[in-house]
Image (tube, rainbow, N blue to C red; front, side, top):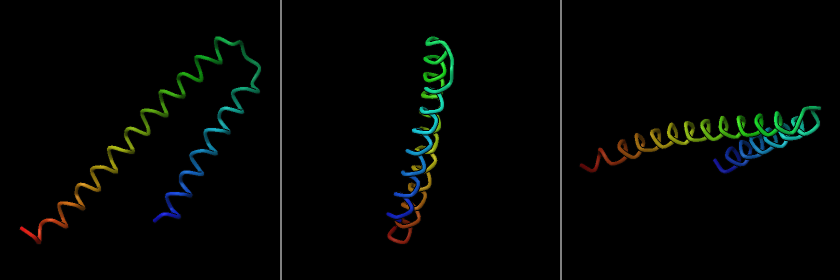
Length: 71
């Protein structure tokens, strides 16, 4: 489990760094660049929140399953 989490952490970090490098080397005005960075940051935030909520629901379901035999 730890290796899988580490792998996905590396993938996410690599994707973020790659996206930022691509944005910084794209010839655009500062205003356009800032708006794109802000838009991508908001999109990333929403995706992380959604993934966290889904994972939380999965873990809560597993916890209910583990607690059921005790009741």
